[in-house]
Length: 118
Image (tube, rainbow, N blue to C red):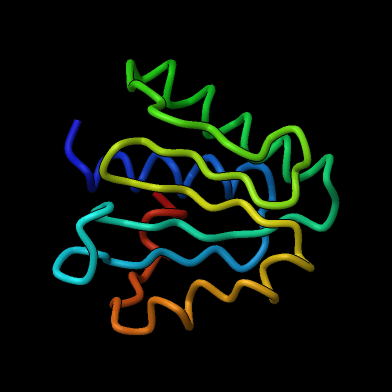
């Protein structure tokens, strides 16, 4: 599966669980860590956990290997590593504090409307 397909899968998964302020950053040429970051948040630990599990479950159904899933126990900042796509699911308070969009300000923001509506 290509990294763009993984991006689509992750964005649809978080959107289906009603994640807030979904953002995708094109990390190619900015970082060697991944091609894309997906960043979103939930308003409670329960929602953060549900969003994270949906991404993991959909990745597994698609036959993708989830390299790492960290932070699920606390559900304050969950990182889901799909190799070339990394999904960050924050609790709303943590998202403001860490502000990854500003930290990775050199990365281009990807328009997600076409992915969500597909």
